[in-house]
Amino acid sequence: MMIINTIAELRKHIASQRRNNKKIGFVPTMGYLHEGHLSLVGISRQHSDYQVMSIFVNKMQFNDPKDYTTYPRDYERDFALAKGAGVDLVFLPDDSEMYQNRLTYVDIEMMTDHLCGATRPGHFRGVLTVVAKLFNIVQPDYAVFGQKDIQQAIIIQKMVKDLDFPVTIIVAPIIREPDGLAMSSRNVHLKGQDRSNAVSIYKSLQKAEELIQQGVVQSYALIPAITDVITAGKPKKIDYVSVVDYETLQPIESLKEKSVIAVAAFFGPTRLIDNMIVEKKGDAYTCVY
Ligand code: PAF
Image (spheres, rainbow, N blue to C red):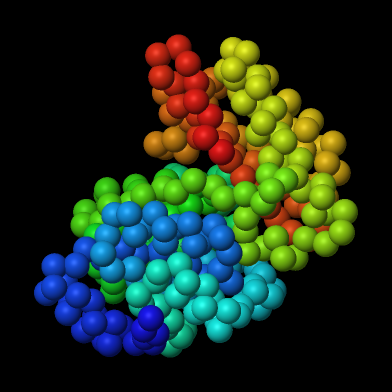
């Protein structure tokens, strides 16, 4: 597995892979890899021949400087895990390589000012800008993003469509701990009771599925039921419980052809997110979470 730090060297190397007709798969990350990231590599390998992973803790997407400094980092461990998962090349740029003289941003205001965007101003602008840069640098055929960060995955799909990036986006399933908690690099900050209470987020989605299968499709009924289950897990604060349209991310009154139920809550100081994609096929609803 190669580790490359500069854009110029990366471009040279990818160009030589392309000359050998290799399809490039790409998994962008901020490191501190867990099974969730490794599953993205597995999915990328099903579609492409040469696997690139970026590891870059993107300062621009942290609205809280403390969150940036405390974001867990362990590059040696990441390299070992990436290699084991079949990554061929890790792109590990530093801040100055990525952000010299930056004045240009990418944003989709309408889709980023609510859900996670409401409490993290500028976060998605930072995400879209760095992902656009990474796409231009790596020029992948396929890029894989986790469903766990569903708002991120949907806005990246929109950016790719609106700005004609020649890349296919794949949204990969959420990987969970045995008790149902969605895997996240931030879980390492969950201590004691907060860790066990945090599973109430997953339970709230199970409750939503149960209600949907009983025919409950109105947001005014689903949202309080989900909120009650999370509240029983004694979160420090519930950030949001929302039912939104999959394409536009706008709140909806009742489930549509494709909808997202998204939740965010704090357990201790740790903010956790989770979600369920609900699709209507004929009269039946399938819930993926
Ligand atoms: O999901 C992440 O880890 C980050 O938001 C991403 C996509 C790597 C951009 O920095």
